[in-house]
Length: 544
Ligand code: BGC
Image (cartoon, rainbow, N blue to C red; front, side, top):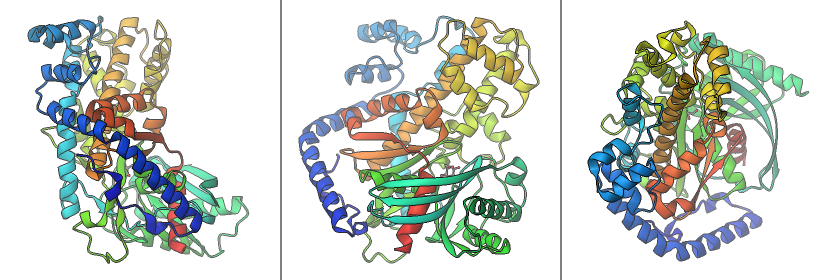
């Protein structure tokens, strides 16, 4: 059952000024009023959710969808009729929206079944994930790392000053000068640098030297002497075991990185050493994950933000947890009521729940981190295009696509970028002309028929919808764990959420299936540049 906000500890310790206290009280009053008027609705919805969780699939998915007033989910009109007339064999054939161009005896109907994730499955995933979160908070060594971030204060909105921030996400490294102007306002100047594959897989020293050079060049470009003494916030978007706000050892590389000499080493120390070697007088004073930065920077504007999510090259989420619910935290609990926890949800890999296909398995085997980050490999931008490529190769090999003709590009790992999926999913032309252009220009696949292009588009939809639904289930798990079903803003950054067409809507639809009416209380909000600004804000909070 959802709790009211009455027993929800707020982050009031971070709010030190009179203005901030007034704003916080207003927020408290607003949420109280809303939660009272919504409580009975929420109770009904919670009961409905429980009932839905007893269902079996796929027929029960339909029954559940009908029962909870969402009969359109995955159902063709004839599927809906079949459901209503209780004709289960007919339903089995009809309940998935199989397009007319799909041959009944080909590979596509199998793909439909394998990639479609029912509400029931998502619900099972939510329950299991909540359990795994509890285990990870209890002790180390579990599926979800649940890393305490040492961030115990969210910004009051009144922080001011200029702060340097670094952001190593996936494909890019950014150096930012963030000006905090108070009242939740910021201005940012930044330089962005591509991290080459050589750097990603070379030595750690080369990587950190590269960072130092980028910082010095950027500072010079904005007229600042790199020798000036200053502090910086470092967003480092990999699983790091933190034992202080400015200290953390790398537990695992992800997203194609595999630099030597960094695993098990304090990355802040590596950065400080590289900056010193380059003659700079700069010290990293805060180390943050991008999800933590996203949460904190969004909370600067919207105090209801309790979750930060990245759906980009990689995926992950951080949220605000009660310190009392982090038994493994051995630090000083005095004056601390809450702490931001980095879940590292990309590592979720429950085989009995996740719809892992042979394509996912092939991708995982060929990756440079096999058997790791299984959820991440099903939903993040680094991998979605590659899953599609595996499927297309299969369809060509069976002769169901492109008359069985391969091109070298189609057989090249990672040649099918996730951005191509976005273009194809956005293509609503009759002849699918942009899909044709993508296939010709990017993959050297020529002379495609409209039928070929429809198949390619449909494959992108299957992979894209699965990703959005799994992401929604992961968000629902966090909200459920926090018991914030009555009001919560989720700040989401990353290229997949921002640029992949329909991703946000598909997530919202799945959240509605999972949470019913309570999904209306959950605001999914696009956050931009969150991680860099967040690092600057955290550096500011720690300078306070
Ligand atoms: C990393 C996380 C990070 C996420 C998003 C994952 O691969 O393990 O630490 O937050 O990518 O960038």
